[in-house]
Length: 325
Image 1 (cartoon, rainbow, N blue to C red):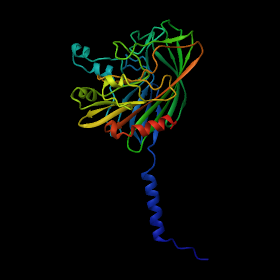
Image 2: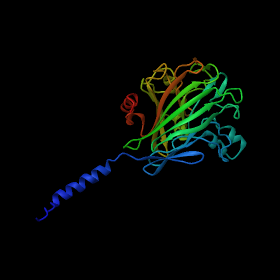
Image 3: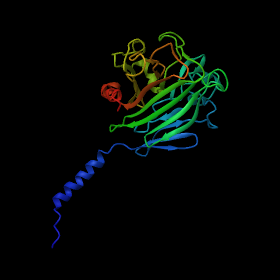
Image 4: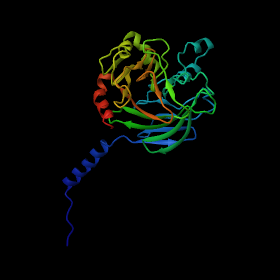
């Protein structure tokens, strides 16, 4: 019996289908673990490094953080204020760098039973300490940490931190962070001053935008916006919202970072702790108590995008986030 002939038209159509499928393949996220960090790439290109342990070149390390965070075209869109400070040529110039504890992307809170997990003034005894990873997959990881109290060797909180990396077809990237906090040695009392009052020093998931973005806010080349219609720092710190965005120029091109507050978070929706000098964070409810051995989960997402907030599909992407996607 003769073999059926292959129709050239069918072959061409099949080839086109394979090509189209490849062109629309989802971006590939990979996480590779080293002794001190998780190297995260998207389609083979660096996205960020999750730094969970001290290194000789980082004596200021006091909690895990993501640095650098790169856009799809390789632009650094967050700032490690401590590293920025070290680059200054004189001591006088170093002193002018504000908030050196704001290190790119991090999780923190200013007052838990008096312990400072925001500025970390006591860098030896008030740290977030990495214990282990219980899972590391191609696009996510689960980490166990403890938060120091003011008493040595008496942890205040245990945290299970679940992080998922999301890469969108249009080049946007996201870091989704869920933290489950458990009070370990007595009740954990969280305190924070009201927004628009000096010395707030608190938030949960936080990002410090690149200097050129925050520097341009005074000339209105950068903008702060929110789902509640805020168009300034002051409004975003007054109006309850589901997301807040900080966008502006880097080398003539617009980039932005949006922070999403999950609807299951306590007090949702609340205003955002965003500052003209470059901080984007979210406090949620202010003074509250986590009872001994009880747990509370908090979930936020940072979206890193090109273009301004209007072009970043923030309402659409927030809806996906709220629906658990």
